[in-house]
Amino acid sequence: MELRYKKVLGAIIFSLSLLSITTNLQAQTVLEVLKTNDQTSAFAEAIEKTGLTDRLSQDGPYTLFVPANKAFNKLSVDEQNNSSLLLNHIITGKATKRSLKHISNMTCLSGITIEVVEMNNNSLSVQNYPLISSNIRADNGIIHIIGGVIQ
Image 1: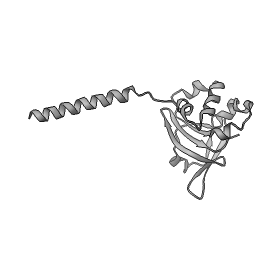
Image 2 (image 1 turned 90 degrees about the vertical axis):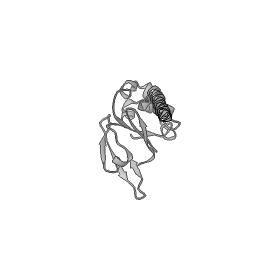
Image 3 (image 1 turned 180 degrees about the vertical axis):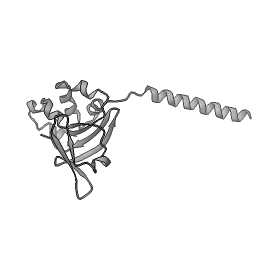
Image 4 (image 1 turned 135 degrees about the vertical axis):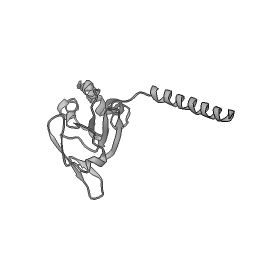
């Protein structure tokens, strides 16, 4: 009987310590995730420079189609600091890669409509730019990395 109590007590202590660890982990917003990703840091920097930080720190959810640094860095400084251009990459709502397969057009925060197409090899493109990486989760949304800049 005493062994059983020790096992139960051990399980309770273990559960409480796990709860303590997970409670101390900080949730990350989409902007915080972008800043820590080697492929999206330039876009994150542009978001901060254009004053869109507060908008992306809100509850959301948001879906971001972020150009990889390689594509984004080809833009001029003026283009990189154009908030309308940045808003071309953001929609409200949470769209995973799986749900994108059932959506053909979406309206971005800038007001333009972008197109999602499923390719022959079961991959997706957004405005003719391939999805490089998808379903990067954040507390207030989801991020997909694309191979170009939506203009």
